[in-house]
Length: 380
Length: 134
Image (tube, rainbow over all chains, first blue to last red; front, side, top):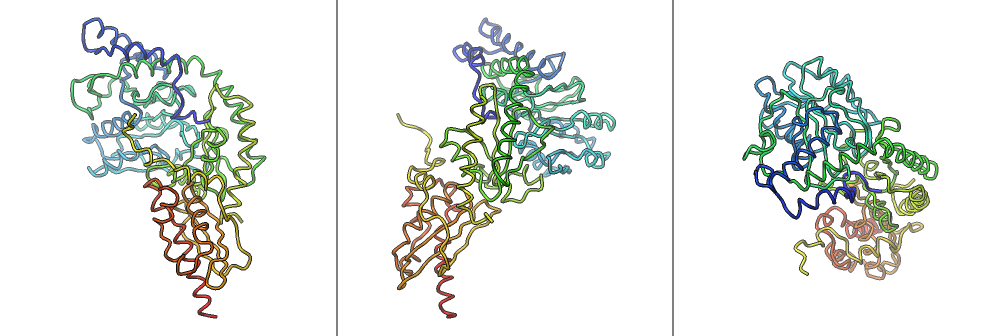
């Protein structure tokens, strides 16, 4: 049950990509291969645009992935307004591909306000309002968080940005394809879309850039993708992303109903069968396919290794599963202690999961937790 | 076929997984002669080793660990290595010895999760300092 950013690529997506893996035409060329590539590129652009409520597909540019989209949004979004101000507002639970570019800009004279979240992972909107100054050039808040599943009130933050005439970027990596995203209704200026979070291939991403906004390039070259992202487009990846956007848009409602049923069964089942098991993130404002919990006194890698031995794929926010060896900054932002954050498990569901899968986890996980707790010196 | 990437960089050896799945000497000793506790829950690893000493030899060694697969496996392995040894011999068991016995550890785990030898030494030092005080 690891259908977050690591979800398997849909077979229909692979079929769409196939011709372009065999014959990689250059969409900037006018020979027939190039024209086929160009058509695939523009088809994909229309599909991604439709997914996020954009009428004019030209407002969508393709990138090499969500990390790249986020980097462009921060570095160019704020960087291109440096004559107007040097202040950025972000939430404490943003992805590192937002926080680290912010750190980079701080070396060049920018100031960054990091707005806290409550224990459910909901961003303090009043805190954003108070942080806005004349120097603020960009507000960036994620639509939903991939580690704790919490969905933000993006529309309210968008209204705040409009009132204060500030540029508003939203990282919709975890949200797109799972819940409706409408950039117009939500007053979003720049939006990050991921491919591999919606059963598309890795190595493709997109950025919605509202008409009238001019972003300086981060990568310089041939001027592809409206000059924002130079380099020959990854046609196979982009075509796959387009197909994934189309499928997830068509199936969104049904998927949400189906997976949220399994999600609630899983969360209720675990809470009733395991003591000191807590949901991380919001119970109500939560991605439909997202179940994240933590177990006191034990560590997440040990839990996911045990689950793996039982045939269940899961993720964890524990230090031991990361490159940095630190507990997840998202879980710490919820107010959890480090040892509590280390005990997190993230289970993300898809249409291919069944009631039996959920029953199986509810059946085996309590035993795993009990065994690890018997082994732990923190268990009271 | 030659694989360009060294998977040992990321993966646990079979020996590590064996000890992780079925760790030896888990638990506590009633009225232990020495207790060693190392690590820090902030980093995600905390180990406790308890020892029973008879005639300057480790008659029994038990552990409890909060941590990842490597933390559990090294704890289990060090208890196996230590039981029956004299205190001086046990003090000579190094972190590297424990990792070697396990067929190696992913480099990222070498410093953070490989604390079991330290916990054993701490338990022996605890025993010795108690004995001194009488």
